[in-house]
Every structure is written in structure tokens, then in C-alpha cells.
Image (cartoon, rainbow, N blue to C red; front, side, top):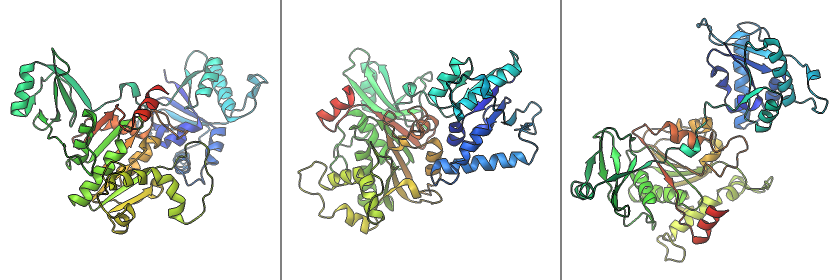
Length: 444
């Protein structure tokens, strides 16, 4: 029996194509949701673009018939579900306590349809609003979140696997610098492997899986580091390996504050662009989301307006240009502004990325957990020939009110690209910024 899914505004603004993601079930969009989508259509944000796309999709469907009577979503399928724009406004079935708003209009429609279909078909409200799901449950209406782009963050791919082996196997790995894995062992391209002595876990060795040869090869140590930054733990060693490997075109780094994600990514980018001349430019970008109350309009030209938002990146650049540790003698007399003037470095917000083609760049996207899956797709599809993209972020530290730890762009990419040969991921867990920062991240 087909189900009836009632879509909330936030579902359509998150993914306009979600209309087509419910197989052969029927979709109901309340007229109040259409009106709410209409209020976003003039916005220049991602919500505005999605609102306009929703309008275009519905307008194309309208040409096939009457939306109020239902239009087949897949005309070529006999069992296709249909889309209905529902006009019902039977608010009398709700208590007087509930005011007439979009959420309660959705609830009223849900109750009306339940009464219409009886026990024959299940009516489900689909919304990202947890409060609406709670209210729907209180009225006996089934309610769900939109799961198509969600990832269980607790089961998120870490990029690393630990395997217990004998001490003889570890010694052989040291000698041959490679090891063939058991065929039963599930492993992904460019996954980092830690071989632990089965009798003594403190004895271990590590490598990276090469899926072309189906072997784990030992990593060459980066003891000298890059731009004054040397790995302080195994995870950072893995991250630096992925950042410096030109065959890996997409690197995702996740972890809490202070684990070194952004600093290592920028350091590797500077090494590749200035020391090795492998890429034409280092481009560092981040989305603009304030922590706490927004400062409002800022005076000055574009660079002056953007400076407060980009300051975390400039802080990392200043540390690297001072030799990697504050107080050391500067490695270069030039500042990051001189690198910008020479065209070797570019720091900018992600606002202007749409429509561009970005060839031969080392592209670092900081705070990428604040991006939606669609925004991440927009960024990755800008990559031209020879470009390497690094996404860094903490899935648990999200400032964007429209996404969470399970449906943000970073976790989505980590999960979707783990089978790809040109991608690698590392989850960093150990804070290295300072003892205070590590304690704050762990206990607060």
C-alpha cells in the first residue's frame, strides 16, 4: 500500500529534488508550504536558489495537469507516485491552543488525510523540525526526518583501521615494506592501516592501503615536516601523507578543535605551491557563519569587510611564516600579503565560488561542516584539471541552523567517497594546540 508523505518547507529548501526521492509513494505539499517557499525566492543564499528550483520543478509538473488533482512524478512508470498541492485548511480539528501557522496547517492536513484514508494508507509528515515531529507524534501522526542525505555520525568512516597481527608479521612488514591483507578484511582505497602486535598493543607499525596492488605499503616518515610543522601523533602523520600525495585529489579531515586540521592543510598547500611548484596557487576559503551574535554591517572595502571572517586563516598563515612555532626566527621575511600579491596565495569566502572553474589549485575549504551536501557538490564540481581539494571541519561544531552533524556536507562526502581511489580521509582525535585547548574540547 502506498504511503502519503507530507513535505515541510525545510525539506524542499534543503533539497528541491527530494520530491522525487520517495519511490512510488504519493507526495503532498501544503499550499502554506508553497507560500513559505515563495518568501525565500529573492534571497541570494542557498535557500533562495533552492526555493527558485522548487518553483521551477512545480511549474514544469503543472504543465502535465492540475497539481490539486495530482500529477504522476514518473510518467513512464505504471506504479508512479503522484504529487499533490493540497489546499485543505481544516484547522477546526486542532485545539484552540494552536495558532494558525504553517506547522499547524501541516498537522491539520495530516489529520484530515488520516481520516480520509482510514487504516488503508499511512500518512507521514517529513520534516527536519524536531518540534513539528514531536507535535505530530502527539496527534498520532507518523513523522520522520529526511534520511536520504543523512549519515550516522557515530558510525562515520574514520579512514583508519587497526589490525592485530603477529610480531613475525610486523617484522616482515618492516623488511618488505608491504603486506598483503586477508581477503576477508574489508578495507577501502587509501585507508590507513595500523598493524598492532597481538600480544603487545604498544608495538605497532602503520601503512596505507594501495587498492591497485591490494597491498598495504609502509609510509615514508615526514620527520622534517613541512613549513615548520611536524606530525605529533599517528593521525597527523596519516593526514600529512594524504595532503602531500598528488595522486589523492580529495582529502577530508575531521576532528575537534585543536587537532591541527587547518594548520596542516595550509602548511602542505604552501609546500606544494611554493617549494615544489606542483600547483599554481594555494586557495583557502571558508563559509561565513558567525559564532554568537552577528556583528552586522561592517565598514570599509571588500577586503576590510571580510578580514574578521578570514582571520582564523590569517592566524595560521602567520604561525607558518614564523617558522611553525611562535617566537622562532621567521622562515621568510615576506608576509602572507606578499604571497597574495605574488599570486601564490588567495584567501576568500565561499560566496563567489558558483560558476567558477578552478584548475591547478591546492584548494583548502575550512569549516566545511557548515556546508550542505548540495553546497559541497557545487565546490567539488568546480575543480579543474590538476586541482586538489581539502575539506576540513568538525561535524559536532556546526553554526549553520539548517544542518546538523548527520546531514552536513563534510560527513556526506566522507561517506560517499570512501570507495574512491582518488580520495582519502583521516579523523583526528588528539588535540595538539595546547593542554588547555585539549582539556576544553574534551570536558566542556
